Amino acid sequence: MNLLCFITYIFLGFLSFFILFLLRNKYKISRLYNGIFSIFLLIIYASIFSSYGINEVVSNIFIINIFLFIFDFIFSTYIQEVDFFNKNDKNTLYYLFLIFISYFINNLYINRVEEVFLSGEDLRLIIWTLLIVFMYKFIVENDVLKKSYNTSKYLGRDNIITMYTKLRKIYLDDINISDMRLELAVYSLMIYHNSKRNSFQRKLDNILFKIDSKKRCLGIMQIESSKFISDIESIEIVTKDLKKQLGKKIQQEVLNQYLVNMLVKII
Image (cartoon, rainbow, N blue to C red; front, side, top):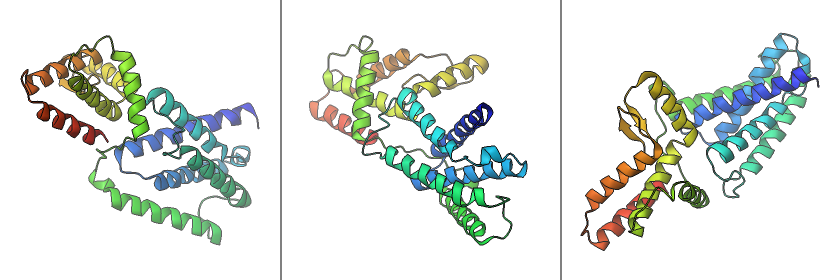
């Protein structure tokens, strides 16, 4: 494997990660579909390189999904700030299985045919038929043509604790709330909105806002505004608004019920 081939695998691994990231955020894509799309992209890449006679890339094209695993790990750990190796998520088991299947298809299918595109061979026809069925099922279930968007995201207990710890460490000096229950309600909102729009995505929003100045949701609390709002400013706005809504003499039961509702919404 030469350097150019290695760089090609890295680039295509990132391209697969980016495409799958868009699918996960736009549609209710399950892990099964995530794996099928990964294999589908692998076969598409192999088809393109095979048609141009670049067999050196095709011979070990399963390596693309190894880099897909690496990019997913980096993004989850350093941008989304979640525990990638959480046993409940089973990410390690999923990628081991995906890489094994990719290697199997690479050696028993891709490397044994002259052309990867449909040409009539039984094995090739079976694989493409399965891929088409799954693609059709995905489009129907997610109303792709109707532009249906995924608005829900499950947060596990460990991810909530990890995110709470990191957010508290970052904003501890900026959040001065004497009422511990109210402080927890604020952090609950922060965790919820941060899971929907992480720091990396918010930085992109800030850049776009400075370019076009259009009204959009800004800050960690996602406040809709026509002027620039930082993460800390958005926290201050929400805290002030919560204090007004809850009132100074609010009964303990009301505040407790509000907090429970917020936590249920997150989980």
